[in-house]
Length: 435
Image (tube, rainbow, N blue to C red; front, side, top):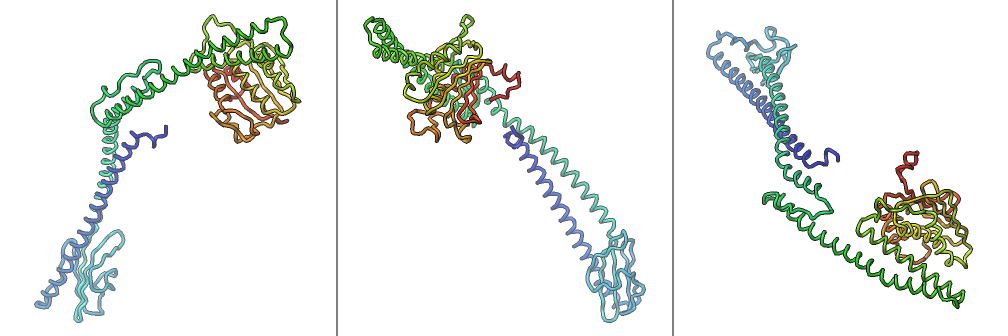
């Protein structure tokens, strides 16, 4: 999770920005106010001193120029400013800021028709004090920024503690056990209201899931009885010696369809219960043998098409899983290849811990490959064929339950290649990238 997206970080950053901004505004206001007051006070003082000196000089022409430690006064005749320092000579009447070298002055000038008066005030010390004030204010801003940061961290911790506790309790919930009420663990505030809402949502969601599981389990269970009746009746009819070849073929198709339906209900029951249906005594199933049975189920469907079904068993692949689950996975994948391949070949290769289904059909557009497992998704290449778009979604869920991996890829020579990796960890250790 990125730093800026965490709520606690946002609170800390907000405190820091608010404290820093407030300190900066205060410092800027203090500097501007100090500078404005200083300039106004000095300018007013100098202007008053010049006016007072001119008034006194008119009453007593022998009055000498004012002299202080930081104030210098000069009186001269118009056009004869020789006694006045050069930086002040050409200044017009009024108050001015003058810099000479490292010194700073405020100069008040009054040029009358009979004499000129210059009054200068050395403000270098004031400038130094202003500089020190600026440094002090910067240090104050930094101090208050750090204080705001510390306060933000402390406040964010206090504010986010109930939310963090709520998140931790949610992470500790186990889907296999009934959730404990969260509302009782928090006070009656905003977090408590959120906990109550989560409790209510969890109760409704759990009720919905339990209802869905019960429905699917009941359907899967109830379907077994009529399927068993169909299978038994078919076996009895197949045992009749006077059965014609045509009727025998039809009964075999019924038997295969009943077997497929039984496999599907068993696989769906495993999905509903999220159980693998395996234990320590579960025998390994021969994937090649199951693939051969699935291929035999589809041969009657392509008898009138220019299409070959080929099984190439390179070596034995043993998988610990119910044979019904493996049959459903192979049935959907091989069935799709047969459905969308008008002519050519559908080849099933078994070996190296995987099963590959290769066809010579139109393939799948590259932009649709990431969506092949989406429920009810049907691509542009379906050609109007019927289907609900649920088969591959079921296959993916079954593979996820047993830790298998699927890979869809278009073949360079045309068609589609679908690979089922039964031992993906072993394949990755050999250098195959994760699909």
